[in-house]
Figure 1 (tube, rainbow, N blue to C red):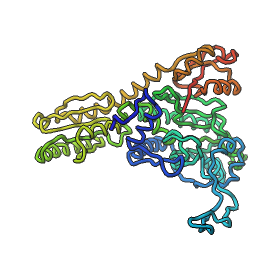
Figure 2: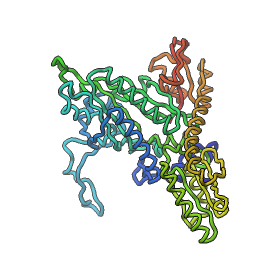
Figure 3: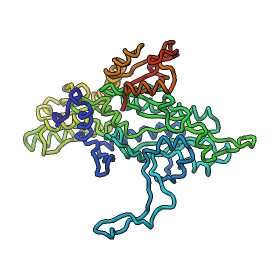
Figure 4: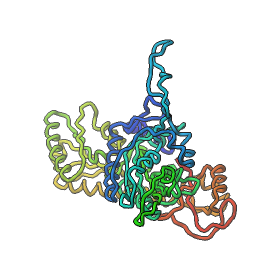
Length: 492
């Protein structure tokens, strides 16, 4: 199975698509630009969702749900917001079908046109802030810390499984505060939650920073982000958190009476990550054999493959494996015994490597005689023979080591691919090689646009917690003064 995967060096884009499809993560659907997330892929997303949900709730956030359909008039209330999403909106215009009078099939019933057209949500700021107007009256009603897990639709013209699809799954937090500082603190707190999740659970090193004005979320005063470097040298925006100021509060007239009885507009933040994280997981760690999953997110952490020739050998090996499975599960690990009789062990090994299961245990009659099992780790492809009585402890240690090793490998790759450029010619040469480029920028939108037009590179962020480089210099493009380097890259 793994031999059917295109090599990374041969065609990285095809390699990515091969893994997503052949590792049973997702596939294209009959609806253009939309995907089917298969059970194995969805199990990974569920683990992400469960961990993140717990992290959110520990900060005081509560889950809610808001409508999928949003009145079109709501979008016209925040000009910058509607401009940012207008080209991506799917619009519902009618509410009924009828038999086609000219032949078989159905057509839209022209008499069932909606009085007001509805937008299939691309994001929920407008519908949520129209709701918050009913919830917020006094300072006692604040803060509101809400999150929803849902799907959204953005009518993308060029799509790619997980990375950019017309419909995708995500979470979106929307918070309301009495002061600007509280809203800014919330935006910062949540981007750090994302960074912790990426580093601790995804084993993916990220750079936290501010987006440039050109790259901010539509309607935001400030956007914070986590940026990761993929193995092909392109950057991936893995999560964003926004300080929205009072823009949406003013658009929907959301005010509260402060302690002195004066009416004040509410301050806002919003933040979100999506199934794009699934794509990041593939591209950050995968190899030419398939997925390499961090144990913290692997639906199956340990797979056990019995080796046998006779029914008696099968029964004896399977009995021992069930006992081992129970001890491993009691220790908190997710375990599966692959007892399919339709595949030879070698094919099973290749399949589980493709699916990125962190640890594989094989056991046959000779292992039973010796009281050992063969243990294989996915990240390094190394094997070792382990006494059965020490197996549970060795597997636990190995899973911890795999989690750390995957992160260390990704961190080494990222740090080796952060380079400085001091001249325009140097920048143009380096951007062709990929990676993050630290370069001076004069701070103007005009320069940022010209750099992007000429090189396809964008400012990924102005770093605040890693890759920070505050020093005097000159903009690589205009030669104007600059006080810090920002992070450029080509991106997904």
